[in-house]
Image 1: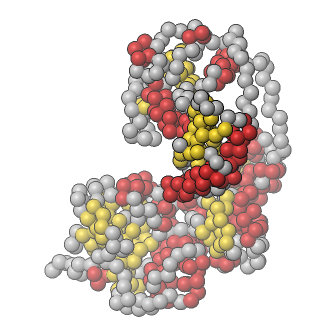
Image 2: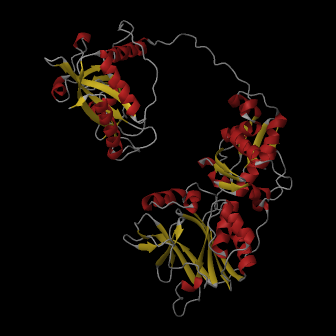
Image 3: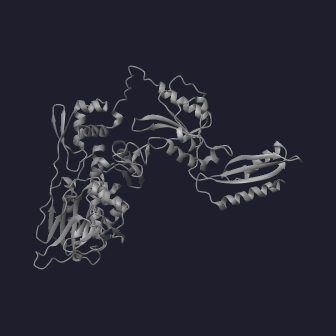
Length: 615
């Protein structure tokens, strides 16, 4: 989340340190900083803290605890007002598991226009675009305390039916299959039944994607005078799946998918109504609050001994108590046991270890003394591991290259309950398919790592999972008959370049292959290479060959990566023919054929100037 130090300063009477010191405070006690520009910090808020820290208020409270400075103003600690009520708005929630709370307000007589300078600057200081005073007010409150909000033009909603109570009606329901909505950015989405929408209930027409984005149908414009304000709480899983299905990710969906407390909705409504009436005028006619099930906040207890045992620390009773005070957590202390009742926004404090983490990070993990790990009573048996590693050494000595592929497969005996890739729902029962794919890809890069005309030889050692039981398997793209490996090749030998397979269960410390030197690591380019071949007649001398190689290096324009001699012969007259393969590659970009052709023209011209005949 992008935060402004000037904005954070509103929560403190004492001046904050400079941006670098604030960045260090967050980094060593709470969150990493992805970017810093002037007084703007891009804070990498982790999912477990997104419920309270995707906001300036949450990050300010963290900073107060870390730096141990007074938190002068806490909007979530201030009492809520008595909202006016009337029958001018009705709200109906179809499924309270998907919409945990919905607050709606009617505001009449507003004047939509440009935002005041202070609001425009605040919004833009964290990378947001100022739209108008009403929309900016909803965005400001979201960025300030973390509650997403939305404003609808009440005049664009349907009139109540004749004989009704005259109320504007808002509905929250599942979308109908094939139902469509046009969003504020003029994108049209076709919806499925798993997506929740906000509707103009009288017309049963979608006016927003719940927890994600508003629709064009009830957009606030410069002509708007009456508003319906939404401050709600939508289920995190439902919102995340809808955003993924639509490929539509917003600031609101990011917050809802991390499950902020439904209690926050009332504070968001309070703040946005106060701000809109301040900068856009108008009068709040009513506020409706549909809150089917208020969550219960459970206390969490942890003894001081448990804190120090988990951390390996020796923190005192006073130090631990001071951490909970700095964090503003209601704490009851009985002897050496701390019982904490989290504030509603701290949805991450659930188990004793959560409190241990709070003590450790606020006091600083650098305060935990290093402790050597205990020595094992007996040395572990590593013979099988060493045997497998020696076999790998032998294969590499014989020109093989090791690959490591994923354990998932399209088909297998064991299916995954929650596969990362729906196209790979099983655990592999063999290394063969993955090794085939690796060999196919290896052929494209073989010119970079192998001698001319040499076929890549690959092997893999990995666990496979047949129904008979998992084991470690070795597969190679060519046989190594002198090893005397177990005869398990079967029919696969005819389909995969004499594929060789071994079940590595009995190879141990008795196996002693030849050792080899791994050499020095060379960096590789992420960009593709281009090859060109060139043949020429030269005089039959080593000196002439050296001249050619130096010429290649001089005229390679910094993109000639390798030169390989692929053919040579001497004719009866004593002239020698050489054929080279030139490999071009850049570390900064993808080369084009035109660029390489230009280099080759320079090389041909240089060869001709030396009297060599290019064939």
